[in-house]
Image (cartoon, rainbow, N blue to C red; front, side):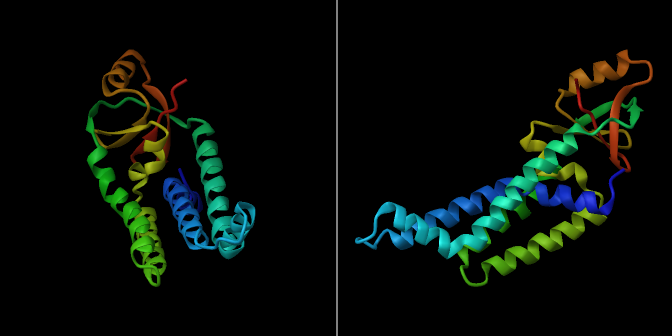
Amino acid sequence: MMTNLSKWMLYISSYCIVYVFLLGVSVFNGWKSVKTIESKSIAEKASLIFFENKFVWCGLVILIAFSLFYVRQFMRQRNNTRIKKKVEENAVIENFGFLTANILTVILPTAFSDYGIWMAAIIFVFVGITFIFSNGMQTSPAFMVYGYKTYKCDDGYIITRLSREKINILMEDEQDGIEAREIVKGVYVTFPK
């Protein structure tokens, strides 16, 4: 089972695509602002852009590196249980609520330059608290980015790269069920070999 710290780390990592997008927007906006300066070379313009936004860029690069590292480490952890459940339906619709929060944190800083970043930060923290205390790990976009699908089963969720049919066949074929890792109560991740 995940601790609250590891839940926060997974939540922060789930925004990796948002961090990449915000870094791109920052570079684009910086380039737009120095493009009008005609006497400088491209290298001088690039250094102006970097020094103007160095803390934002360094922060975003650190968040991107952390996100990629943590999700990779998370996917490498060992299974801790065996499950034998029937997968009933795809639960991808439940992920859209969390994706809406991801999209808002991208739109707000770009739409409202002065207060957008603060509104995005408040939404980020609020959604994070909801994500952690509701044990909504199955809604993390980090799984979708790595090709995992979320399925409902009789008393929880299974997150896997396998298709619904294939996982049901494996559940029936294995006497004790398949190996999985319970990340929170009722949410299992399978790491097929």
